[in-house]
Length: 532
Image 1 (spheres, rainbow, N blue to C red):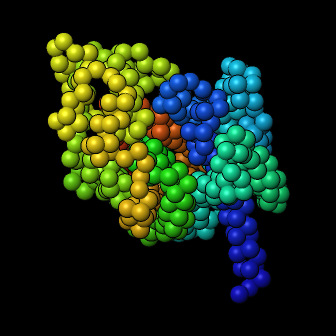
Image 2: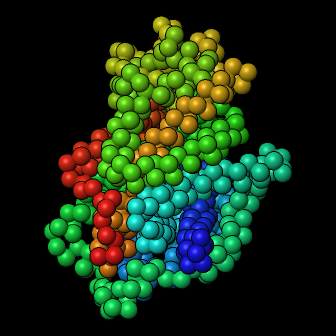
Image 3: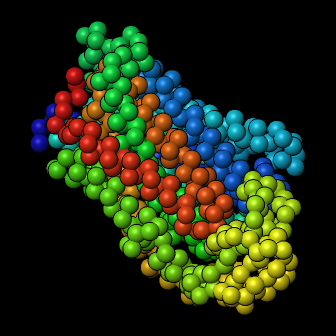
């Protein structure tokens, strides 16, 4: 091998390593909140209703996603104006500082309403930072990639999201292992946030070794960079049309699949199937670790067969294997494997709640009406129920497989659900862990098929001089608004309807729209010259 080829190979490895590791750490910073959402609810949103506190905590998690498009606009503009390298040095610094600061925010008991206000402020800074990070890293790698290998090269950036999620779980589990459960609940949860300072310094050290993207450097030398990137990115209908296709066809669709495979599965195992939290987190860690190479595989496959066929396959398989009415749906099988007793009870003794005009609000800290208290009781225990027409003369009648309880009496309900076979927690002796991991891995495979070629598609879809802006805006509207709100929206649907599978309709609807947009409007981008 010639010295020039060796030098090029060394440069490519540095580009991929530096960009990917930095993005892994930035996703870690972002996801550590989602991993600890239930515990943060106790410290920052105290109240009598655990369901309301958890939903508020998820709403704050979603707030970070809602501002990602603004971050995409700001940093996309800077990335096209001053360069790729310096922009994502700024974003990673902002993310690390905001995450580190969360470790030191006093809780609600100490400073009252200022606690959630400061938490929201840090989440907004995280969202702004991530709005500029992903686009910068993906473009930087794509503009270094040799022809015919952009899908493979950029798939490492795609893998970084799963790696960041995995790292957040590993750090949480490691911290739990160093202290008692009481200590972790009281103050140990702050350690994973504080740890972000270490990974920030590592990321900055690695990224400072990078030079500017060759595509951007060439444009700058020729005086072809955009003076007004945001204006130029949306100056014509053909450009705006591509942005809309990228938003609804690519960004929104693949994101809801990814978050379903990561967060929805974690919450389903831990909160609905009542599996031990550490066991659920270890299952997710093992499954994500096994599934990450699939992202790279799908990026490589997209280099061979095209981006569009891979993306469409991911969407179609996701609808078939996740939609609640699909005969191939995986979540009911996941329930049977994780908590057989709960799954059996839901089949043999289905629960109905008969009431008329029940004033139930998932956000209420304390339910007052008997029917609302009954639904809050069931939701807290992960018990699926169906709301039916009220019985005349009774505010609420709860039925467990034909056994009726009139009015809300917590002790009577506890006796009834126990007699009906509903367990308080999953029996780990009966949990089929290999099957649980296999099903979770299958769901992660779906996200890999849909997610693997996305960075390549997004970078190839737009012209070089406005690529950072044109890519970042639709990507972060799609991932931030459609994907970022998925944990909250799906959980809200579940607690509002009583059906533990109903939240999956949100993902299904978004993916169906994405499939149609990609099928009819997305051009194949594999062979495009991205220097233009």
